[in-house]
Length: 110
Image (cartoon, rainbow, N blue to C red):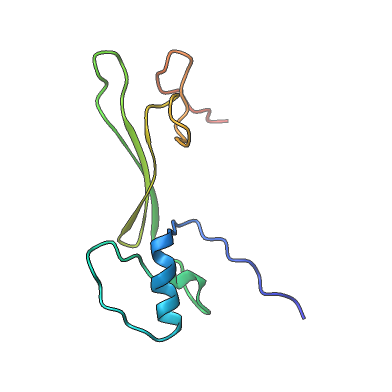
């Protein structure tokens, strides 16, 4: 017997989603306590369909010294997942490439 195929989801998932998903599997309906409750990872359920997913970036205007703050995040359904924020070339985890002078690098179209 072959093991089931691994799930590869492009959308974000966080630790907050695990408890809500397990509760759904067990048939529990816990009441929300606040706004940070997570989402059910429905795409991992049998017959589940991946919700809409978008990758987004917000950039501040450059400061006098040329630095700008960049926020990279994803939105899965209505749930935002923050991936990284900081200064390009100075913050680990930012996908945005930078040139040696610290400005945003031009992406190759090849």
